[in-house]
Length: 397
Image 1 (cartoon, rainbow, N blue to C red):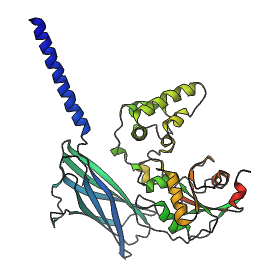
Image 2: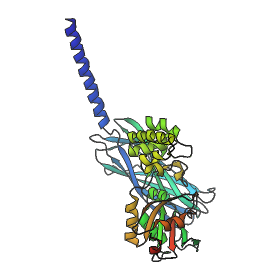
Image 3: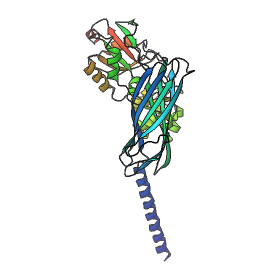
Image 4: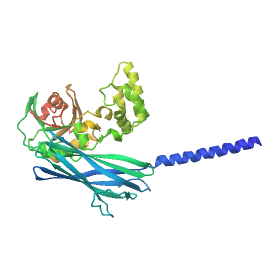
């Protein structure tokens, strides 16, 4: 009798365990509050020197399967970046809902709105900037704070938009520099953002200076920024692997923080990071450093953690570029210039991530070894190389 009761209790416990497992698996398969804000379209108007009007149109998209998500709050703030003082410069910001089925309130109040399954809604952001001298403004870092309310509860989120406010002339003074077997020209641009793309930047700033046979190079970080491959640390949730292993990297490494390492984990997965770490540790004991970076993938070397680049990107984790070969091939196809994406530093290290066919690595190494683009706030992400000999002279014999 007692045996039968024990068997019955065991069956009940097993069924209860299976039910709990089924609920957990069902929970894990659901994305929860998967409502996101998409990259916006921005317009800058100068009606007078003392007044700029920056307006953006953005979308909220509900990607949550089978569930509606509410948006009870939206507000925006902007940080202005300038070459000079911001004393006397003021700004006002308005967030205007543009729901497809509801009029916005004239008092500016954002009323709670339900975004149905698979649907979108829009909002406008208007920033009026006033001051006696706005000529030194470089960019506006717009942070849109919004709250999603759904199956995972109330979740605050922040969407970041960086919008340039100053566009230098492509006709810059002659700043060509001689290097072995070539001349180089660091090219000053506006602050590059995800609103830009490499081909348009080459057309705008390089083509007016270029001649047939020239080579254009772009830094890997600016390309990644234009591709939108940046994450604010508040959007990164470090897991067990990142929290434990980050302490084993040198303090100067971009993987020495939990968020920096988690950015890599999110790309290649925790198992690959752990396997690369174990193999790298063993190899280092045997006198072979650098094995971790070989096994963890190209992104392990390319991630720039916070403070790794110029403001406002010094507040972000910037990943390496996506498919750099496709980028250089597109530049050549649409502009006719040979192109390369490079990672260069002040230690005379030149790493070529991608280059168009027939572009000799020796030329790039000699031309960029002194890092003409700079590693500080020069804002010269593009370097034009003009070989003093035909490219064929640089190819291996």
